[in-house]
Image (cartoon, rainbow, N blue to C red; front, side, top):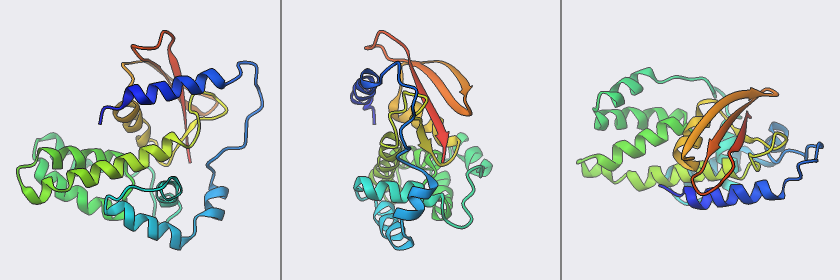
Length: 211
């Protein structure tokens, strides 16, 4: 899933069109008010069904699934899965996959769970588990595409929007994949990462905010 050359090119292009003298922030593409008014329960469930089956999603369905999930009753952006983490870290990946499958039933857009599910399925010798690898990969891509489309991410007025803090590093390290992370800071209440790509002279700062 190494697509960073394409992503870096798009991000660098975004930097180039941002005016360094601009101080007015455009209306955010993603907000709770916008999701509440555009994503109905029916549209969320329909998109979720496609998502869980590993089908490619339209941009609209990707937004509905990822940001709509945060609007569902019981959503907990800070939920931890220490038992899954311990099992996965021990190398018992088949067992971890089964635990993750169960967790994804109630937390379907958790990027940390999805990346672990994909990695576990991809190396499994069990055909039934291994068959889930492309499904999990597509689910990851659908969510990361939604985050990628949420804003330019390279301007303080247009941060990437995630639904849980843990999604930031999953997206950063495993999807946009900079060659080097030079630092992390809090800027105006947002999380900012200064990164470097080998094929770009200057460092880039990515900004993130939570939905």
